[in-house]
Image (cartoon, one colour):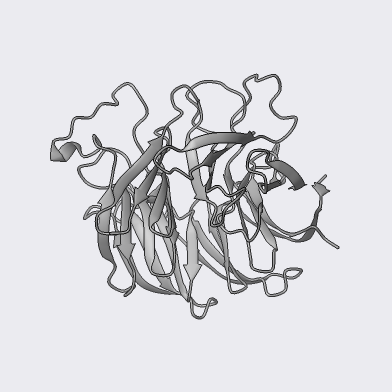
Length: 377
């Protein structure tokens, strides 16, 4: 049975499991984890009664598990999943969703002439897309910025990578005995880009000249810490007069058996030297530090939030509402643990977002999506 504190379920959608959910202007976009399902679109003007509008599919062998939309433009990723449809190719699908019930393909941007492995995760601010593609001549995913001022003709603004990834350019590759570098998730705030890089930590880039990203600083807790860095999320306002960065480790791809992953809070007031000042873990799941199975702990925070309470998708623990008003002492102030989907052993809350009304959307990796009211009156 579902458990809740300071939350209330408004409605449930029995949709295929998904990788990302996003809401723009009361239209909800759900990207699915496994082909052939690609992206579903719903009208959530009435969150008690969401209305299905459209679903697009992808060929077997590829998945389209990330989606962002703004100002009538929807972007989805295409990434190699398993064998099949080799000619489809990886990259981004760019769609006109001015009529969300009838999306129109504007263009497909491909990572290379042969499609490559594709794009994993990205963010989009209405003009620029900050993406994590594979690229010919590079080992692992790199960071790239695309200008979509004209979505029919995307222009590559710049690329950035860890020195050593560009083996075709003669760079010496130093990680033969470690995990391949992999840009995971670039997020922009002002003239900075905060780039998570999986088991290679996170990087702060100066993009005041967007054509030439410059490294400001980086932090990597691996290999001492066993979990990969999933998200580096800057807080847009000061907390306790400090600039703060939320860093979520994902509870997968562990370097060794370990206790569940958690979230860090960094003070980046001096961005040249990010300083960890606290952590947050759901109470009761870290049992004496003993190893537990993957997807027990943290996945990621909502990239969209409007005050000091940040929704997190915490895999087997569902939705957690974390108050970071005091970044030195984050605390949980609410949660929603969904019902386990039929045929599964436990929930796998994979993504969470919220809209301007404060309504939260929690997507399960396996099956289903919950629409949740926080702090109901």
